[in-house]
Length: 479
Image (cartoon, rainbow, N blue to C red):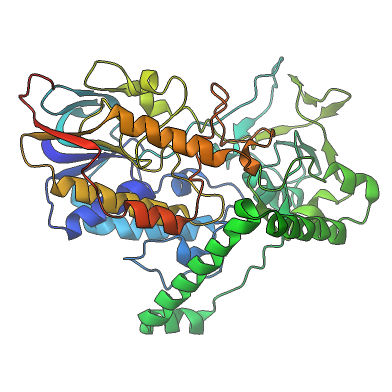
């Protein structure tokens, strides 16, 4: 198969790219997805209580609003259904159940090997996401019962009346603990570091609300714009302003005090790091669940035995172990599969940490664009906003990529951008010394978050600027 554009991944970034390519009149493209369905994170994560922690009307495409969300923070199945409906119009371009095994720049184009045969493309778009490789703690011993990661929930395991260990207290654990605690005989919540949690302030959209949004798209657009503005204001409370951050921290601690009257438990649930260093979470149900008499909050997992989990000081007999332990975010599994102009893999290029000019283009990898990759995430606003800006940038690059031509960003531009990201992350809470999924342990660089507001990213990169790029014919001897 030969196409102009090969897109890898059918989550928000891949489907958004496909929809925008189609709208622009481009018909020669394919979306390669290793799973049997679209949806990415929202296809894979089906744990009890899974939901969006960004307002749902901001967590969808601006060009494809969804009037049907039932809540401000939509359940995961509603987001998955939204993406499945969005994919319908590009279904002829989808190749589901197709795993990319390698991608190599031939000097003229991208040669991909897949589980269903070869694909040749002029342009490669990596939209594989950053929450795909589950992180499981390496501890001694082995458990002889069901053990599964929250992103691969085993619905065949009976939790009613079971003794359950939940390992981790990040975003997934905060959502699933109340659901698990409502069913289990006992729960051991194994915590390495307590998170900051703010009130969720969720709301329901009834039938009349949803009908009004469907009949009045301008009202839905105004709601989205208001949510965006509200989220941008959170930048100061997460990152930019010490006084605003202190006020948000105080609100989180007040929320904890109001929901956990027991001083000893409250002490265990009090974060020991700077506000904003880790992902700030939202829940009205987590603390009450942690305070239930059959829930024990312990230290981190140190080992496994047949029928038990171990901490440094104790042994807990359990029937089921749920690993809510996050993902390998700073080392992407697709990077080892992609080989650039010089013959080096993307993993080798990123040996000291991920980086990309405009968070999108990588030197030595002509006609290749990474969506949702280095410094393209946010701690205060919707990832979809960033993805849409990157798609605009990509479309601008495609407009300047004539047949037989290759565009490649300069190494100097990529390195200068990486230095900017590093400098702008100094004295930010992410680099305040706590362990988080933003900082690459190999280099100590903050390589996941854009260190500014989404508005700035959109202003800088919604329009493609060819200045940092070299354009050359693919038969150029320097190719």
